[in-house]
Image: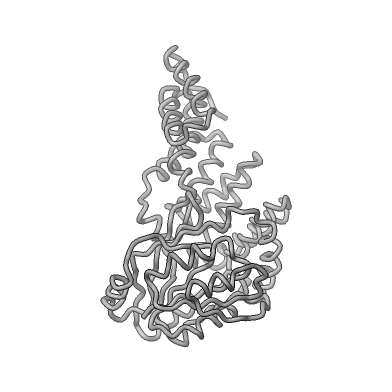
Length: 374
C-alpha cells in the first residue's frame, strides 16, 4: 500500500487539484492542517483524505512528521498542496515497480519546480519506517535520515517514473518572503554551513531591493564552499546568483567566474551566469564557450544533477546572448542565425526579429571587419 502525506494551510486554490491527481496511485491520504481559515479542510475530507489538526509552531519538519506518523501504508509519497502528479502510472504499476526494486529504501521522482523550468530528481517516496523523518525548521529535508540508513544498512536509493509539477512560485511572493525569512535565519543556528539557506536569504534580500545584504548572504555561502569544498549540488547556487547579480549591474568578476568553473565546470546555472558575465566584460570567446555548454547539455544529466533551470535559458536566452557577442565581434551572419533561433523560440519578443534584421543587413552589406575588444 502507498500513502500520501502533506501539510496544508489555506490551500483551497490548489488542494483539490493535488489530491485528485494522486488518488490514482495511493491507497490513503493524510493531510495535516496547520490553521487554515479557508475551505482546505473541507476539500481534503471531500476527496477522501484523513485530516489531522496541528498548531503551527514555525517548524515545517515538525508538521510534516506529524503527517508521517499517521501514515499506515507500506510506502510514503510526500507532496505539497501546490503540486500535482502528472498522469502516468496506475497504482498497480507503481506498486509493481516499488516491489521490484529489492533492498531499496527510498525513491527519487522528477519534480518540475516551476512551469517552464526543467525537471530534476528529488527524494519523494520511501519505505514507511519510523527512522525516516524530516529535519529543519525550513527547507526541511528527509535526505539526512535516508543517507544514514543507506550508510548503515547498505540499502539503495532507486527511482520511479513519476513526475510532480509545482506552481507555488507564480503568485505574489510577498507573504511567503515575510514568512520564510525569519525561519531561514533561525535555521542557520542549526545549519550555519548549509549554502542553500544563505542563497535563499540572498535571493529574498535581492527581491526586497536590499542589494548589499543579498551580496553579503551570497558571499557567506561562497566562503563556506571555499573552506570545506563542495558538499551538496546546491552549493553552486551562491556562485551562480552572485555572478548573475554582478553581471546585471555591470560589475562583472572574471576571477569569481573562474573559481566557480573550477568547482562546477559543467553546471548549467553557473555557465549561464558566466555567459552574462563574459558578455558584460566583452569577452566574446568566453560567451561562445559557455553557451556551447548550455545548448549541448543533456536533459537527463541535468535532471540527475538535482538542478532546475528556466527552459528559456536553453531554448532562447543562450542564443540571444551568443548573438549579441557575435554581433559585437563582427560575426554578423552568425549573429543573425542566433537571433533567428531565439526568435523561433519566442516569436512574440519583438527585439529578436529587429536584431536579426539588423544583423542580416550588416552581413549582406559585407561588413566583416572584426571589432577590437579591450
